[in-house]
Structures are given as structure tokens and as C-alpha cells.
Length: 320
Image 1 (tube, one colour):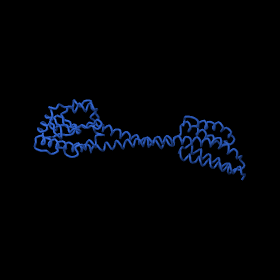
Image 2 (cartoon, rainbow, N blue to C red):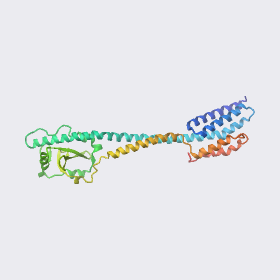
Image 3 (cartoon, rainbow, N blue to C red):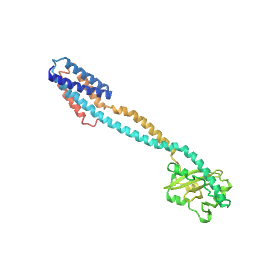
Image 4 (cartoon, one colour):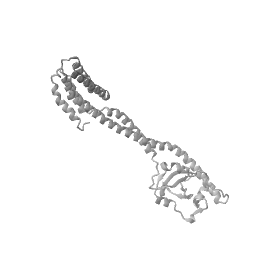
């Protein structure tokens, strides 16, 4: 076999091998058909030494090589888009994880509120004993601020420093004061009357400052606890107007559901985006396939110039 013929056939095999890999990657019927047809054309020249080998070289030069470059560009562009999709999926998963931690803490917070209510009720009963002169013990039970330390970030509503100042303002004549605490006189009287039965209802925060709101179980009365000064004062819901007392947990659960659904769609889309070929190019490839499938393609080979120019033009458009 002539050395030049051997080199052209060897180069042809490499080109067809690259086209085969791309046909497997894209899983697009017309690309696979072009690969098969190119293989048939190669074998035609390989098995018929009388055919001018330059026409096989010209075929690859005008058509196959341009097609491979076009498909490689589409593949590279698609892979960039897939990377962006998976970056978005990753970010969504991070948000979901953070929100899930908050939602999962909801039950723990509910249990913590019950425990905190018991601690406050016992502490207030002890404070009454101290103020009555029946005890000199420190009235507050252990870990009285554990609830706020654990859950203020996610479950306490944010207020301003001015709102804190308004809520904790009091007149000296209206309170009992000792070394341990400050409590409104009428509040202590009401606590005694209703046997210190109250429940935690809201948590407020302003920077490092914490205020907790409690409600009497048997009457529609509220009071606050300001841990920084162990201060207990009456408060009303009117004083809390304008403060967002929701924890937005239902909203967080909705966001989790939406992001999970979005990630499912993104995962599904990633596979199709990876192998996507624009419709305009599919149409052009179908047209080219029909031409190279023509029984008289060898005689019309010079006409591939137009098709080759179209393929090359595709490389410099915004279609891909």
C-alpha cells in the first residue's frame, strides 16, 4: 500500500474514532448515523485502492473535522452549564441543611419552653420566700438562661434597644428590690394568688440583651423577665405591637420543600443539558447526513464546501 494512502487511512481512523466518542457522549441519533456513515465511507476507500485517497482526506477536511470541532465546542459549553447547575444544587443543599437544623430544633425548643416555665415558676416562688423573710437562699434555679443561650438566635424575635428600654422601664415605688432581683409589687401579688402558674410564650432579643415574655395560665395577664438584671415586670400585648413574634418556621419548612423540589428538577435537567444540541444544528446535521448518504456523494464531494462553511460558521455563533 502506498505510504501516502496508509497515512490518510490512519488519520481517517483517528478522526472517526473521535467522532464515535462524541456520538456515545451525545446519544443523538443523527450524530450516531453520521459516525456510521463516515465509517462506511472510510471502509469504501480502504477496500478500493483504485479510489482517489485524496477524496477521503478532502471529505474529513471539509466535513468531519469541522463537525468534530463543533460538537466539542457544544460539549464544552454544555459542561459549563452543568457545572453551574450543580453549583446551584450544592448551594441549595447548604441552605436546606441550615434550615433543617432550625426546623428540627423546633421540637427541642418546645420542650425547652416547658422546662424554662418550670424554672421561672420555681425561682419566683423562691423569690417570694426570700422577700417574705422566710429564706436567704439564692432564689434562682440553675441554668435559668440556658433556653435563650441555645435558641435565641433562631426563635427569639428581634427588637430595638429603644423597645427594650421602654419594656424594662419602671418606677422605684412600684417594685420590690433586693440583692437578687427586682419584681413589680403587684406582679408578685398576682403570682401568689395564682400559685406561680405561668408559661413561657415569647422570646425577644436585641443584640446580647434578652427579654422573655410569660403568661399566667389562668388569666390573660403577661409579664417579662429581663435576665441581665433579674427584672420582672408586667407587660401587655399592646406593648408588643409592631414586633414580629412569629418564628417563621412554617415559612422555613415551605422554603425547604421548594428548594428540594427545585434540586430534583435541576438534577433531572443536568443530564439533558449535558448532551443538548440546539435544534438548528440538529437540522443542519440531518441535512449533511442526507448528503453523505447519497450514492453519488463522491462525485459531489466538492459541494461539501458550502456545508463545511456552515458548520464552521456555527462555531462562531451564539446558538451554542
